[in-house]
Amino acid sequence: MPIALLIGWIPSIICAMHVVRTGQQMYWLWILVIGGPLGAALYFFAVMLPDLMGGRTARNVSKAARQALDPERDYRNALRALEDTPTVGNRIKVAQAAVALGRWTDAEAQWALCGDGNWGDDPVVLLGHADSLLELGQYGAALKKLEKLKALGSDGETPRVALAFARAYEGLGRNDEADTAYRFAADRVPGLEAGGRNVAFMAKVGRREDAEIGLAEIERRFVKISPALRGEARPWRDLAAKALGRS
Image 1 (cartoon, helix red, strand yellow):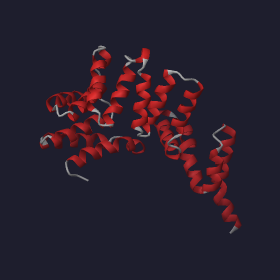
Image 2 (cartoon, rainbow, N blue to C red):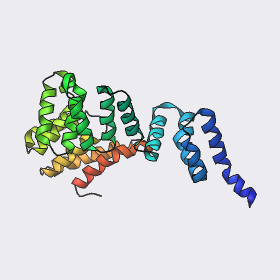
Image 3 (cartoon, rainbow, N blue to C red):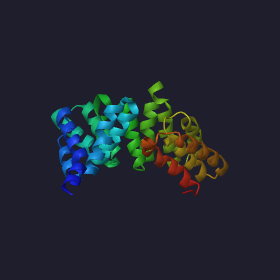
Image 4 (cartoon, rainbow, N blue to C red):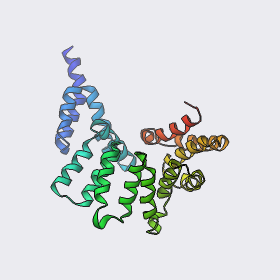
């Protein structure tokens, strides 16, 4: 029995050696001690495997594992950096970290502060602020930010901006304008968000046949995504499916 127990701890010991030799965060040692084989498996997939594989996909898997373990890490680090160096750039990072956590009220407050002074016409700030206002249901205020962004020229004519316009128009009941903006954004914005929102919009306004076609396209694209990276896409696939009464 002692020999079997020792063998069971070998993966954790190997991982602990990797932590020390490669200079990883020391909290991994606690995870390995407390979690045993399960902790070793987590460390392997979060740290060791991406190192062995290399490439963008491996880095994304590693990032997802780290975020699952400590989802507020980036937010804390961004706040700390802002306290040390109170620049607009660091405040933008705080706002973006708040967005990643779904803290839309906090994000909106940070974007509003970013927009003070010389950064009031910055495209990143305007779009970030508009997105947070949309999530808070403040469609009129969001539309004002987007119209200001559009007036800047090419920075205000991107597919991502079109998606924000579509959401604002939909929230204000301006469905014809929303439809045009959704059509433009659906096939141009990377990922499944634009397509998922477009399907949900079409279902809401009674265009079920078009919505069904849109859902079929989303399903086709979804199955081609690497299983390790489907977590980000799944909510938009599910949004479209739910709008049509699917599970």
